[in-house]
Amino acid sequence: MAEEAAGAPPGGVQGEVPAASQGAKGSNVPVVPLSVLDGGVHAGEDPPPYAASPAVPRPRAHRAVEEGGIEEGVGLTALMVAAARAIETGRPDALARDEYAAHFVRAAPARAHWPVCPQDVPGLDADPLWGRLGRYFALRTRVFDDHLLRRAQAGTRQVVLLGAGLDTRAYRLDWPAGSIVYELDRPGVLAFKQRTLDALAARPRAHRVTIPIDLRLDWTAALLAAGFDPAAPTAWLAEGLLLYLPPAAERHLVRTVHDHSAPGSALAWEAKLGVETEAVRTSPVYTAARDRIGVDLLALFDPEPRPDSAADLAALGWTTAVRTPYDFSRRFGRGPLPEPDDALAANRWTFAGLPER
Image (cartoon, rainbow, N blue to C red; front, side, top):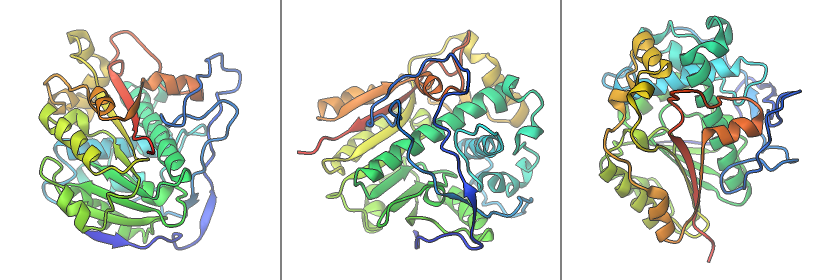
């Protein structure tokens, strides 16, 4: 377990991250109004602010990688998402920005050749891996950023990132004073992440507590020992996690969140519904990830039918909203849209809230 005090990064700040909330100029894509619960931005409102971008050095390759950590299995998907965030950061119409993301990629020797800026990807938007799938990850980042910041602005000061991976929200986002961010993931992943951030002298903007643990095990004792207060409202996030868990593990995780949530808490997560057809399973998104960078998503996804966690939480008194990524692509005027044999069509983002008594 490691703790860090909040503070601005050394060396000052350079510029502000654009809100990127409006549709593209001239776009005829309709705007979909979304509720505060599901993390959307109301029509006519500005989105919550990002923190000013830190002055982060140019990324360079590093040598040390924790064995059994970031360059294999699900850990490798965290590097893939980091590369996608790095590429998105270089777009003029970026949905989200992460000045640390490229450093994670460069710190992993076997992946240091992966692209980290738009210029590295010829025909970027037409590329199924770094264009379509990469922008999906950027959109997901932005939507969950907005959701967490809205919860914080509503008074929640306790955030738990389940399967945090290379998430840098503790560093990127403009958290209210008194916010605490708990990050749970496997020891190797968090150790790699910490080394990379330490090399940058990065400092979080919220009180940050890392808890190295396998989420398939009992993680609540470690969370409580780290200072988590189950009597306080919590914003829980399971981004890019449940897809890889067996159904029983997902049910256990969701029930555990419920058992440790005070009224006013929220849980957001990503899931994939149903069983995809063979045409979808052989679509360019999946084959490009497997053949070009060695990330076989279909082999990593748990093959069993998914539980209906939204219904399970609703039965426990939570309010739930289930959205498709395309709801938000239309809202922002950019991001992936439906296509034939679509590898993203079954993806759902769910936002649940436990009402105040």
